[in-house]
Image (tube, rainbow, N blue to C red; front, side, top):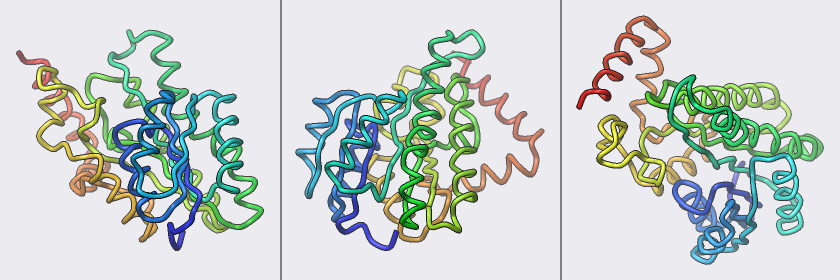
Length: 259
């Protein structure tokens, strides 16, 4: 994407956190933004706070019917969707003991929402030779997140889907990028009394910093957008010495379990 000026953009999960910051930043850069959130009132509040053109559309961006409704309404508002930010996500605690519902919800929101959006967007993008999909994945998709297997597993899947999309359609004009931050000061960040805060709290950045990294990533076209640059070294270390990586993660798990 050469410029955001007058581009038609959709941001899901934009009622708070990264999505809200991203909607405001894209609007400030001149894009016409559809602000989507399952909480319609939150979407409306964010849309009203944007500097430029922004329209709220409430609804579920994960279910097949919800994604179809969102994309249909967004196209009526924008004419066409140039940029789709699949940002909505959830984090459910636990490992194999987590409920079937928690695993299913995590799969639908963190993975299938991206797949369902792409299914509806790609044909029109191929026809015109351009289109842009940005998936909010999390550093958990490159590394792992102690305490939540549903989140770690589905974020790995989200990264794999984004990568597959990127190499499959790049030569046909479609750009796909993955945003992979560590801790971000949103409602999903563990609180000071929770174990995860010991791991992510001190390094947490603002949603606005993530939005700034996304805009910079749009400009230079890199696949991995890393608001925490140190994640690149962690990812390389994990790949080069996986046994050492697992040992280190085991120590982190023990640290988090300590009183």
